[in-house]
Length: 463
Image 1 (spheres, helix red, strand yellow):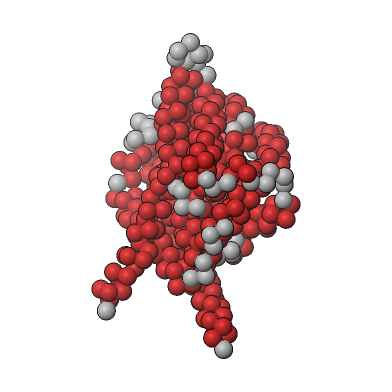
Image 2 (image 1 turned 135 degrees about the vertical axis):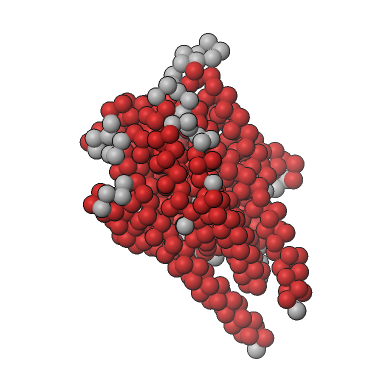
């Protein structure tokens, strides 16, 4: 019986889930690798700790703002996947066009917020040598805001229709663009001036424009080849659809914003401890962010698979999709937790030869090992809930456990008990464990509710 049940899951869900998830995982890893490459390359500059600290601080602060705009586009996961599951490709185009209008409206606002962060950084009294490199890097990144938002719109549109490979190609190939740009602009090759850390920021900006261009070209090519009608889609804004995107995306954007912002605040607080703790924090954060990209890709696949199943009114398939994705995410992150416990120093040495930074980062990875499993569960559960149209529950969980519990506890341990950066990480670890448990339970309740609703509809139809 169990063997037949397992075979059923393999045939019905694991294979298509992996078929969609693997390109998205590669895409997320490609996204994360861009930051890792920046960190590694500026880490080879003469003052390694300060260069890494500057890139860390500016990068996390920029993403804390930009991720809110990207999160607004997450409503496309629900709308496009439901429309595609119901066989209405024209409605998918409608969501894409209005996603573009939404990105045009919010890009200038986000860029203004990023510029407004600069005086706040100066007021926090971060080490001046770090700040002198962080602010120019932040300004360079800011010019990538609009193309980055367009990239997210195109990405959600394509993956909602199960077209994940172009997204993977765009992000993986963008790493080569970024790597070449770093080599040219940081050290001044091919006639360009040596720009140091700010050169890395401009390189990332160029790579993001490239990513957007790749997805735009593919979307037009795919529509032309398969005659999906994208070129004939209504070009005028549909304010009701834009409102739907905002209504679905705002809680998701708030949740992502709170999640990234809590690490931005932690990074800023650790910056008060000095360049070495900040560099160690950046390396450890890069490492756990890299492992996080795998369940994040699975989460996107879960949102699409759950949404498509509900679009064709197949609650059993939606349930299988959610639990299959949860099992895949938990299996991977559990393995990563073991790896971080066993070989943290080996991982850190890839980033820097500085012994003081290695010691700090190793201690932080020890803490990170304990939240890997729960981070995977909360990420995949968030995607499954988003596919079912629930973006508010993850937002509430992140607000309560990150901001009202984890960060205050971490700050207390860091500054009052003298645990330093490890204290902040311990508080965030506690928050992630609680978020993972609660969201797993909430997915179970959501799954039961839509299955019961479909059963009731079937009974009504039969009578």
